[in-house]
Length: 265
Image (cartoon, rainbow, N blue to C red):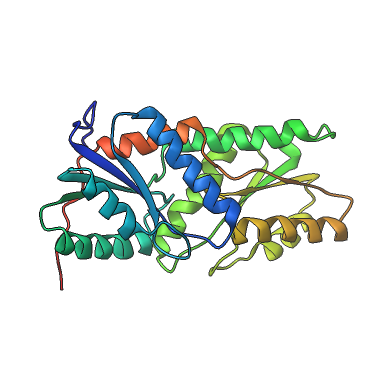
């Protein structure tokens, strides 16, 4: 994908998130938007949610339009290119283009399988290891990455590359992909199977940008399994959050040559 060094000054940026009922998750999304604004203090930058929280995506686009801007880059605050990125956001952009026919709305990619994202993943895992009072080698450790999951098999295959790549680079003895949303295997099942394999430590890494209902469910699931198996050390890594390298990738997505949307209605 072609990338320009600097987004033209006459482009606004609109960051769009999925949305959550979790107030902490909303706050983290807004903090991410503020960090992006810090990188581009002279640019119009707004943010909104697809669902469940305010401001809405439509409100964010309308606010950009009030700034006398004719060009907007919409960047999805998503890790993977699943249904929200492929269908929901493009459809909402088409509707807003009809409402504001003078706007030139471009659409960027989700964060995706990016080296800087993998670096943040590694840092989160290393932080968890440092916080442990035990000294257990990675050769006695399994890494479990937990994702939401998708009905699109290709998306789940891409997600599965994350723990494999991390395990290969960091030297873990084993790795698994698990899900906390709509797919199998579920985290509880994966943990029980991994414990039977004889690992001394299992690190659970939530492959999520922000906190929310699902990340909290991951933590409670790990806590429940830990009570049943005190002989095994189960470590809970932090999700990605608004790391500076995450901001780097968002800015890169904004500078990329965007997709051209086609109105299929």
